[in-house]
Amino acid sequence: MKERTYHIITFGCQMNVHDSQWLGRALEARGFSAAPLEEAQVVMVNTCSVREKPELKVMSTLGRIRQATGNSPRVLVGVAGCVAQQLGDALFRQRQVRLVAGSDGISGAPAAIERLLDDPALRLSLLDFTSHYEEREPGAPLPRAAAGHVNIMQGCDNFCAYCIVPYTRGRQKSRATAAILDDCRALLASGASDITLLGQNVNAFGQDKSGDGTSFRALLDKVDALPGLARLHYVTPHPKDMGPLDVAAFGELDHLCPRLHLPLQAGSDRVLARMGRKYDAARFLRLVEELRRARPDIALSTDLIVGFPGESEEDFQATLDMMRACDFMASFSFCYSDRPGTRASRFLDKIAPDVQQDRLLRLQALQDELGDRWLAARVGQEADVLLESRSPRDAAAGNGESWQGRDVYGALVHVPLPAGDHLGRMVRVRIEHAHRHSLVGSVSGGRPC
Ligand code: SAH
Ligand code: SF4
Ligand code: F3S
Image (tube, rainbow, N blue to C red; front, side, top):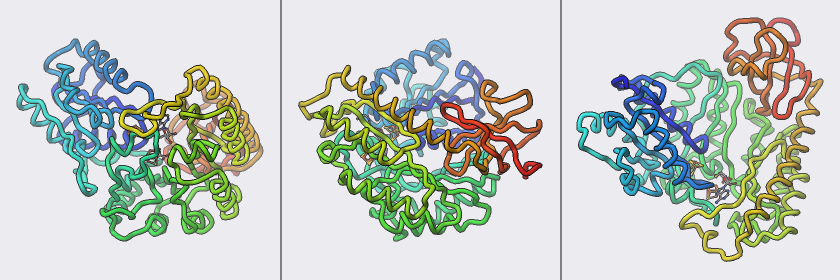
């Protein structure tokens, strides 16, 4: 074990990934450095409870940490994130755990870690929700990267019947516009040119008591105008809150990319109503039409749940029909799972796991078809690719070096290039062929710019 080193294990959504990156940078600003699990003095597990068996995952991760660190009492282990918020102090039953930090509490984790290292007898829990979005200590400078994320809110007020997020992340709290813009400017100054705005229900930005009067569309306009920005994205919008101005933005803003992750969840009106999603299939289809009118080439992806309580084969077929009608280029799909405290967990008409599994496989086969078709249609087209990193060896085409990046639709593109550092460059390529989940392009028009 090396003094003042840390290791963070992260599960869950982009917001957790973002929180973990911040925690790492905050610890670095306090003199810590990153280390492999076996050598770290501080090990944090940032957890997710949205699906599956989160407690089991945490327990098995704690077991892995015990093994890797020889169960040394000198190693400080903490649990953060949504399972920490959900289970709270019960996590102290695991003797090695000395810090439990919930969704808002994580902002106090760097200081708590220092205290815990000074006092080996101490255990701390940070579980209170704050009433406003609390700014965090800035941390060490951002690492060099082509793209970055900026949090615009915390929590969610929607209480979809199946979802634990409003309980684990708390009520919606919008961040102040000035702080968001500062973060965006810092990212751009660090060399990134691609920004994704993050939140659980981004279109509702500003519509809570923490909001500063700026609407989501006004925020988009402000970020879009920042010098140095090449690409702007956001995740996740809620269909019920996508207003006409949000739709129009796809035709009006210079840098907003023609790709939207728009969670549908289910295609049957009966299921959508029981889920409490507050839109029906017709409204969703209208929204898709409006989006395509604003930006004809827009690529749509989605989240889908199969086997929600009471879902009949006919309901499930309605989901498949909607997938075809919306022509999703990609989707994340999940079997419904009970989450403690949610409305759906009390519904009695649960669907048997083998039926859920069968539906999931059929849905994923259709998605593969739609995804393959979308990727195949790109072959022969020109694309601007923002290079993010060297391709893993097995994805590289040919003998030379291959880099990977994203096109304007967020598709992964591998590009053979002369050896060198191409991070952050935008290259124009011709798409040569399509793999299962990515494309291969070759630089057209001479030298990479
Ligand atoms: N705020 C986003 C994402 C929330 S969680 C939204 O509203 O879409 C990410 C995804 O996990 C959800 O979109 C949903 O598809 C899935 N999910 C959430 N709770 C679930 C549950 N109990 N069972 C299965 N999937 C679930
Ligand atoms: Fe969960 Fe619904 Fe909120 Fe998304 S909008 S985080 S699915 S409650
Ligand atoms: Fe998971 Fe919490 Fe994100 S439950 S999906 S880590 S908000």
